[in-house]
Amino acid sequence: MEFATFADRAGTIDAEPADLEIVAHVRELLAEAGDDLEIVARFAQGRVFPAWDSTTLDIGPNACYEAIARAAGTNVSAGDVEDRLAAVGEIGDVAASYDFGGQRGLSAFTGGGGAGSESEGTGGDLTVREVSDTLEEVAAAEGSGSQDRKVDLLFGLFNRCSSEEARYLARIVLSEMRIGVGEGAVRDAIAEAFDVPAERVERALQVSNDYGQVARIAREEGLEGLDAMDLEVGRPVQAMLAQAGTVTDALEEWEEAGVEWKYDGARVQLHHDPAGSGGATAETRVFSRNMEEVTDALPEVVEFAADHLEEPAILDGEVVAIDADGSPLPFQEVLKRFRRKHDVAKAREAVSVRPVFFDCLHAGGDDLLAEPLTTRHDRLRSVLVDSTVDSGAVDDEDIEGLSLLWRTDDPEEIESIDADALEAGHEGIMLKDPDSTYSPGRRGKHWRKRKPDVETLDCVVTGAEWGEGRRATFLGTFELSVRAGDDLETVGKVATGITDEKLAELTELLEPHVAAEEGQDVDLEPAVVFEVGYEEIQSSPTYSSGYALRFPRFQGVRPDKDPADADSLERLERLRG
Ligand code: AMP
Image 1: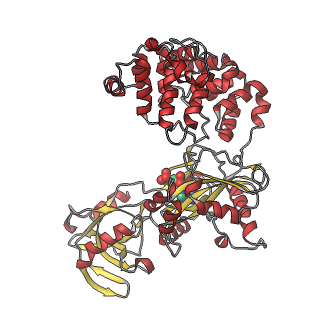
Image 2: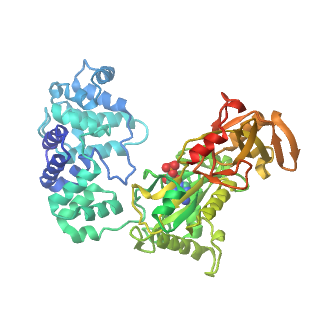
Image 3: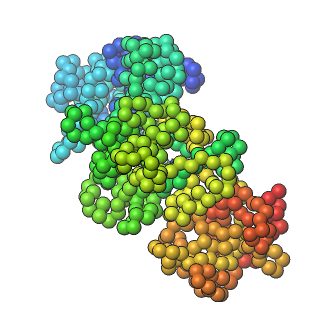
């Protein structure tokens, strides 16, 4: 397909406000793409590479401005392009505003877009394949002088563009296509163009993350071909996402909730093939939540795979930073490791990481996306246990790298799992529908991170406990009270949502107000007010107010408030309803 034709169709789509019409235009575009179908399906979304591929052009916007400036003529500089961008606001409009015709013939000196074209000029002869091939060359250029080479290649392309071609080339180069073609539009257009059901296209997209390949297979092999597409070990899948939710809602909607600890780390998807594609050595790749490859930054995960996985598998989990005792460190620590490209061994000495897996998308040749969570978790267990021990009779706690999954309809049990998670230094809990399938890329109701869902309360801190182990010098587990006339009555204790750094700060703030101490228990003079979130207010004999906050969470200190300004028992009763 001529790149001019693509640019013309993209212009029509760009001008179209109605979603249905956009799908119809994309359908036509795919239908006329011929041999370039894969490229056109990607370009329509502004992608040069498949969604699973973390390859980038590896250029900054300046390289693009420079290439446009050179193609625009000797009197235009990259700074002029940037100024025009500041005035106009959009790179496509900027690129389209120059006349590249003055450069006729120059592309011969620069490789002519990498495709050895014979006819240079002002548009009309460039094909989408040439654009794609050249952009691949741009991406592949590495090492010294590569930035200049990239600019040369881009210049070669712009130099052959008409205004409209330049508009869409610039947008593709800077990943700013924005013509309103989302993933759903391409899915529907593929379904309509090649007469296959949209939900089967969707499944094929989920397993492959390659719109180009799915479009081609839909056209060439139809439904049968699409259904035969499977996950591939080594090709990342979009991560299933969670939304915020409460225990109360989860238990109302599902008969039982799956409950897991929520680890405060970074999402990882581990792909491991013990035989490797060449048959000799294992192949392991690790991807981030956005399908970016992070294998080299996380040698511990690669080692984990080599030690624990005996069959090809795709596992979903979290990588957590740990201290010398193996206790979790705050999220900020994992960030020091996660995307690191240099000095990985040195960084590893300072902070080590450990993977914990909570899902299994593929094992031993079976795709498991359509299986319920409980089946996937059983499979995860067996993938990990097989290599850990010979006997099947082993406690889940003893299986390295396995995130435990409880199933319960008992709120008390959930509360105690939450308390254990916090005690062990984790973030809290995740609630999952035990029957749900794995929906890549979806932020659905099937996975919920628990959060307080009601108004916060300002409570006076009237007691605390000295911590243990690593936290022995910190006050923690703060006793909370509300005003009742001239007195203060207790409503609960908060130990949740507080980092070590914060604990140190709070200890400094509260220590001058210690009134009495016995063992780990500390009485505090009323002086400091905490804002706390919670899920519910319950009647309870445990606290002197007669109520208890369910799942209280620390939100912050209220330095602007005195104990006299804290919330009252009346407000608590009103909030309880
Ligand atoms: P958030 O990042 O706050 O939207 O919470 C969702 C994230 O929590 C996921 O993307 C994971 O990275 C992380 N997470 C930690 N533990 C779990 C778990 N047991 N199940 C699922 N996600 C988890």
